[in-house]
Image (cartoon, rainbow, N blue to C red; front, side, top):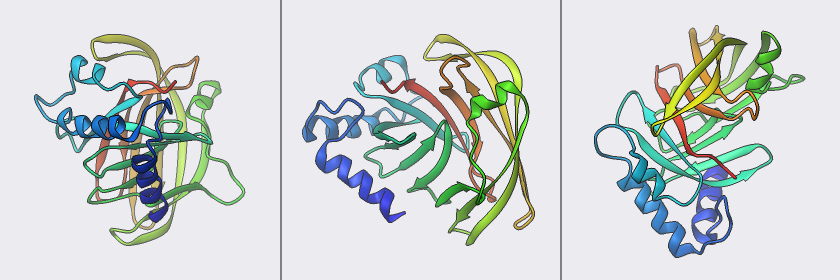
Amino acid sequence: MRRIFALAACCLLGACNSSGSSGYGQYYQVLRDSVAASFGNGRITRDQAAAIPYASMGYRLNRENERLVVLATDANGEQLWTSAAHIVIVTRGGRITRTVGLEHDIASMAPKFGQQLPELASALKGTLTYTRVQDFPSLPAYDVTLACTLSAKGAQTVTVLGRGIATVRIDETCRSASPRWSFTNNYWIDPATGLSWRSRQYIGPQGDRIDTEILRPPG
């Protein structure tokens, strides 16, 4: 968790971002604008999203108003999204693997030793099973083992900022014995690129849910 804070601070002080072309002042202003774009009539509008010149993502915690985070780093398959509201969300291939600043954070997510965390798009070739391990410091519970299954549920069109996007829905069903917890995450991915345009993810045994949508994709 300290590492995530350090990365976010580095991005603020060093002005690192998805394009790498702007200075500290502009990037900090974007982060401040992201807070302004986090309130309103429940959802971020097309104009609010267009005002952010960097890759951005909307997220909704427990069905509250949608908020906006900006991509700070994108390295080794891991994306770190942050905002001036001191929220950090780390994703890998669309999965939320770590968070900072929420009431109930994910401290880590990793495959069980000797396994790999499969990409979501791999479910397009058939159902997969795997095991992962997560830490939940707010419980506290560490090394929580979850047995998971990935499966494709068919083509669906999602609408992001008024634009229809052809996707395939991937369901990820997981279960842990201690604590007793089961859930199904949903991801709407581009079958050509593997980008998760939208997701619905349960991030902890307390029942918290985060809905995400990519407003401006990386690159």
